[in-house]
Image 1 (cartoon, one colour):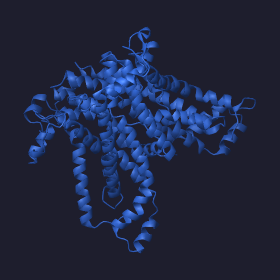
Image 2: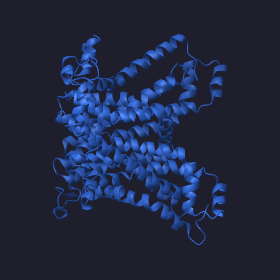
Image 3: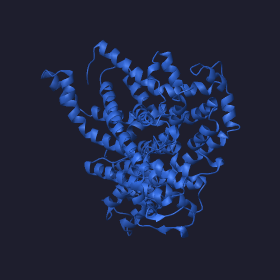
Image 4: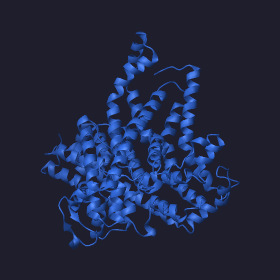
Length: 275
Length: 298
C-alpha cells in the first residue's frame, strides 16, 4: 500500500481517465449510434442522438431476424451452462471424494481441455457432428459446449474438498446415498463456486463464435456472434443497424458483469492459479 | 479417504459420477483432438471418408513451404510478444497504481476489465467501423482533438494492420493481467512495506525490492496465460479484417480454418492446427511444471 500526495492522485486519475476513454470509446460510440439513423451518422459521425430513434432496432429485429437469433443464444447458453454445471459437479465430486487408481492422471488428462481451445479442433469436430447427424442443429452446438467441463471440474473439486468430513459422515450414518450426499450436502455448501463456474461458462458460450461459425449453416439457428458477422457484410454500410445488433449483443453481458463482479474476480484467480 | 456405499467399490461409484463429463469430454474434445492429428496425415477435400488419401507427412512438408503459414506464425509470434510485454506490462502498471490510495480505485478496476467480458466479435465489428479511414469515428475524434497527424489506414494497410491488432488487444485485454496482479499484490503483507519504510526505503525502491519479487510468481502465470491466449487469437482478427489486407493479419487458427472451409483442404488445415496444438501444449506443459493451470480465453 502506498500513500499518494494530492498531486499523485490527480496524475493517476488523469491517466486512468485517458485509458478509460480509449477503451470505452468504441462501445460508447456503438451505443449512441444504435439510436441514430444511419443518415445522421454519415453526416456527423460523432453526433449525439436526437430523441429516441428506435428504427435501427426495428430493422435488425424485423428484416434482420435478430429476435430468433437472440432466442437461439439464450436457449443454447442456458442449456449448455446447465449441462456443464451438472457434468462438472458430478465429476468434481468424484475427484474430491473418492480415492481411485490413477486419479491424478485422469484429473491432469481432463485439464488438457483448458489449454486446447476450440479453434484447434474444429475441423474434425465439424466432420464428427456430420457423422452423428447433429451438424447445423442447436443440439449439436450444446453437446459440443458440454465438453467444456475442465474449468468447472478444476474449480469445483477445490470447493467440494473443503466440505467438512464430519458432515458427510453424519449424512452417511443417516442412511444418505452417495448421490444424496452429493445433492443435499455438498452442492448447497458449494453454491458460490457453482455460481462462479456457471457465470464463466455462460459468458464463454454466449460470446463464442468459433463453434457456431463452423457448425451452423442455417440463419434460423445462428447465435448472436455468428449473426453479427453476417450483418457486418450484409448491412456493411448501414452502421445504425449494425450498431443496434452489437448493442443488443453486448448489453446483457455488461449488465451481468455489473451485478456479479465478485464472481468474476473469484473465477479469474481460480482459473489461472493452481488451487 | 472415503468409500462408496458398503459393498460397492469406490472406483465403480467414482466412475458413475465421472461418466457424463468424461464421455462428453472424450467425444467432443479428445476425439477431435486426435482427429486433427490423424487427418493431418491425409490429403482430403472433406466430403467422403473414402476419398481420403494417405500422404504421411506430406501436408507438413507443404505447410513448411507455404509462405502464408510462416506469415501467420510470425503474426502469432508478434501478438504473443505484444500480449506478454505490452498487455501484461500495462496490467502490472495499472495493478500497481490501483494498489495506492487513489480515489475510486475499485470503480476504475471494474471498468478496465469490462471490455474483457464482451464478445471479441462485438469489439472487432465495432472497431472495423470505428477505425475505417473514410468515415470512422476514431479519425473524426482525432481531427476534433487536433491530432490529425495520428490518423492512418489502421486496418487497411498491410504494414500497419497487425500492429493495430496488437494495440487493440493490449488496450482492450489488459484487464485479466491486471486482476491477477492485483490478487498477488493484495496477498503481500503490509508489515513488509512497513519494515522497508522503517529502513528508509523510497517508494520506488520499495516497489523494486519488495513488491516486484513477490509478484514474480504471478508474473509467470500471467505470461503463460498470455502465451496461450495469443495463440488462440482468431475472433478478433476475423471480425476486424478477415485476415487481410493481403494476409497482413492472418494468424494460425484463421489460416487453418480458411484452408479447410474455404479451400476444402481438410488435411492441410489439420496440419496447421497440429502445429498450433503443439505450440499450445508446449506452453501449457511449461505452465503445468511451473505450477499454474491454463484457462480458456474470453
